[in-house]
Amino acid sequence: MVETIGDNTGIAVGGLGRDITEKELEGAVHADGVGSMIAAFFGVLPTTSFSQNVGLIGMTKVVNRFTIGMGAGFLVLCSFFPKLGAIVSTIPNPVLGGGMLLMFSMITISGLNLIYQNGKITERDIIIIAASLGIAFGLSHVPHVMQHLPNWFQNIFKQAIVGAFITSILLNIVLPKEKEGV
Image 1 (tube, rainbow, N blue to C red):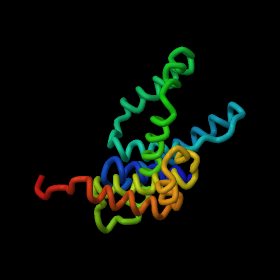
Image 2 (tube, helix red, strand yellow):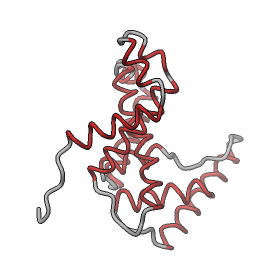
Image 3 (cartoon, rainbow, N blue to C red):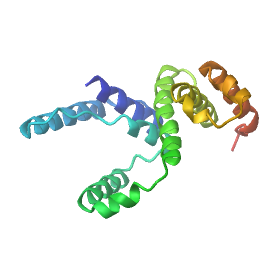
């Protein structure tokens, strides 16, 4: 239930740019409960909300039921037609890894955005923080991805805080600042 509340609050703040209403929160908890009861009827573990969607919705700002339903329908088609699923599985691991890195970082940013509700974090700030955290966590937890890079690069980025610092400084310089009145 706590995950459902957190995920739905993150979706409302990240995707819609507003606080979640009591009616929406109540509906989410009820849907989670009904889903868990149906799962018990079939003898499987209770279900929960899918946190990765919070990051995806935060990145794309797509909160349309039809679009999300189409994605779910595509996944159902993949389960019935193995050839279609096989085509999807040809996506290279680095592409999936890059997407997942940003997506999980966006989940973290959604949490930070909830904490920082007095002021507004801009899209530019979100990208800088997400990429910095992604580099910090990604390279420190999977150090073998740097094995073919020069030693000086490995020495700099093997420390998570250093990788996050350098990434944030470079992105702060490179990414254009938002113009006022646009």
